[in-house]
Length: 81
View 1 (tube, one colour):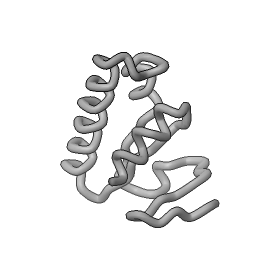
View 2 (cartoon, rainbow, N blue to C red):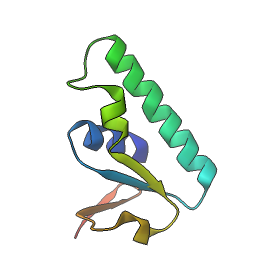
View 3 (cartoon, rainbow, N blue to C red):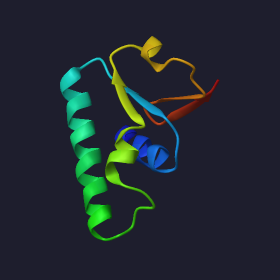
View 4 (cartoon, one colour):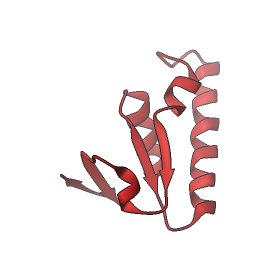
């Protein structure tokens, strides 16, 4: 679910950092996002290119990797900062 929220936010123009304690989960999330975006692009449903959207996505293993954070989602809970 977190990767879906990250994809929507990145497609809407926000910079997004996905954080997990397991690197394999981050790799899986990024691969899933890229596959999903490519499917949307094939159906001409994106306002910009896949690479532009992916450029707004970062991954990290710690909360401090998020930098100047506006929102934090922990599981399915949104925490305003």
